[in-house]
Structure formats: structure tokens, C-alpha cells
Image (cartoon, rainbow, N blue to C red):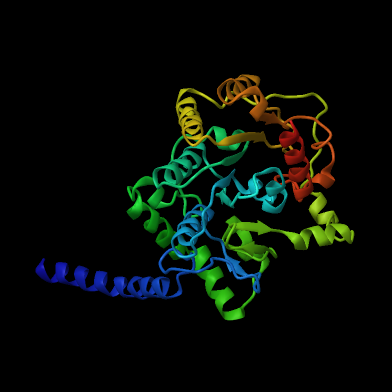
Length: 342
């Protein structure tokens, strides 16, 4: 029996050796950029990259810029990946001359995490003069922490209460066969292949990144559109046919969401912030529930909430979108011109 137990331990230790070396590779290469410190998370000279947690990117960039580059931010755009289309250069035209703007976005953002970002800014003594909340149903319904390495909230926003789960999420993602195989192929070949882009493991979309504003721009796609090279038959497949009868989403704002939204409003009031809320014009043309919209207007003021969801002149035209999830910067620009003129 003793010999049997010794053999079990022996084989277990042998099995741990590959895991140990993989863990060393993980620490050395830091594919998700959550182990080492970086001046910038994106290299404008390279398109090929591993998918990063944008919540962590935004939060860490904000802290680094404030501490190291002495940026005095006072104006913030919050939301999911759709909020990056609201370009700082367009937004500043409607703000005070001393406005220092920052994109505090996250992929697949949740209402809970958005609130934590505002709390973090406020509790650390930073000024908030202007807030642009770019919302939709997918944000409003999320009142609990998200899971997965691409979406888990930055530990510093929750007093490091999730620090172990945060790093465990990235280690597990790294050790998955799909990622390891794709990452090894990428490191050896130096190129992103189509199969690698499944589940956003790796990405090769051309982008232009500004580390000071944390703004990601997709100028390459705009150039392709101008040259009539973008809306290929393959891309057109994503623009599915929609019905002509207006449909309304189910209620998103319940008691938990109300408490979160009240806290956001409380911070805005204490900071004397000018807050504007945009309900995104999504391609699905699903109208935000009227109860949700009425609650937002009652809480933040009728003149501060603007609903562009549903069937309208924006959502009717596929040319206002890159695909069926993200609309283009000229739409965001028109929305800002409209809401600030009022």
C-alpha cells in the first residue's frame, strides 16, 4: 500500500512538471498583459495581438496617466465597446475649454462595473465635470459581476476583493487547449489566422490607439468604406432582415439596477457633473422598454436622456454600421451634436 501511494505521488509530480513550465511561460510572455506593467497596452505599429480585458486596460491606463503623466481628467465617456465610437475630438466641441477627456469603457460592460468606475474616480478625489453614458439593454440588465478573463472587473475597482479569481481567470484561459494552440502558432508564425479569432482569443483588426484618452479608432475601416471596399458579400451576411413592426424589450431596470443608477446620480450631483445618457441605436431595432426609459428620465431628467433605439432613420440604414453590433462614428457625432444642442 505504501509503495502504491509513493507511485501515485511520483506520477503526480511528473504530471505537474509540464504545468510548472507552462506557468513560467505564462509569467514570462504575459499574453494578456496583467502581470507586468506597460506604458501602453496597444502598439499602433502592429495589428496582430492577443485579446485583452478592456476593463483592466481602461482602469490601469487611467491610473498610470494620472500618477505618471499627471493628467487631470475631468470628463468621462462610459459604456461598452459601442461607446468608443464617440470620439473625444467630437465630444470636446461641446464641452468647456479646460475639459480633459477619457474613455472609461469596457468590453461587454455591466451597469455594476460602470458604477464602480464612477465610484473609483469620485473616492480618489478626481473631478467629474462631464459624463456621457452610452447605454443599452445589455448594460442595464447586468447588475452582478461578470465572469471570464475578457470581462472580469479590475480588482482595484472592488478593493481587490476578486484578485485571486481575476488572475485565475487568465491562467485558466492561457492553459486552455484552444488558446495554447493558437498562441503557439501565432508566436511561431507571427500572423493571426482565421481560426485564432474564435471567441476573441486573438485579433487582427487594424486600430489606432491614443494612450492619453484611451481611445480606440477604426480609421482603416472608414477608409475602406469611403473606397467602397468594406461592405463585401461576406460582411453583408451579418445584416439580417428585420421586421417592420416595432417591438419593445423586456424590462431591464429592476430594484437592483435602480439602486445602482441612484448611486450614479448621487455621484453626479455631488460632483456637479453635466450628465447625458444615450440609448444606442442598435441594428436589431428593439425599442428600449418604456418603463426603463421613463425611469431614466425621471431619475436623471427628461432633458438628459436620449433614446435612439428602435426603428428610425439611423437603424434603417445598414451603412450606418460596421456590422450588426457597432454603429459608426458619424452616427455618434450626429447624436452628440443633437443632445448638446438641446
